[in-house]
Length: 152
Image (cartoon, rainbow, N blue to C red; front, side, top):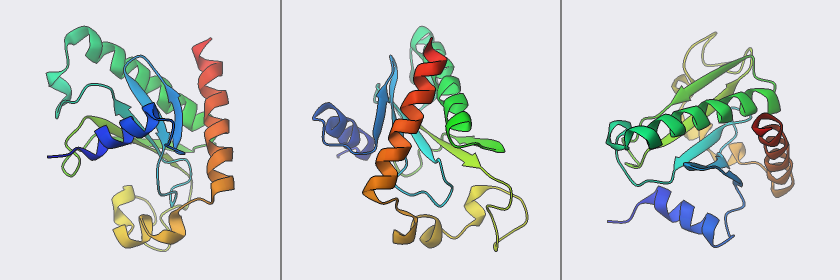
């Protein structure tokens, strides 16, 4: 059975993934395919495991520290009012984090406040939520700059 996350990582290694931002020690930072929530970023674990607790303790600690670094960079890069972080893996069973930069009023007209999943999936992940090639390139560069600032 193929793994969508592993396929995306192979695209990064082959330099064919336009969503790729930066390689860290334990994972890869990519802009999310859909940008209903502007700044949505994914952190893909280099290890193919289904659960965080399957990672070796030192790797897991480093991964969590890097995920927090990515979270801060996303917040800075996309001027988030709040950050939402999720590691679900029900669909793609490979450890990966969804980092949502949240902005006041971003759930309108669906709700006043709440989780991102209150937006219908066909809207949140619809074609109108895909960034243009130019916008994607701008987002990648913006996030790269913020990650480099924090790594110093």
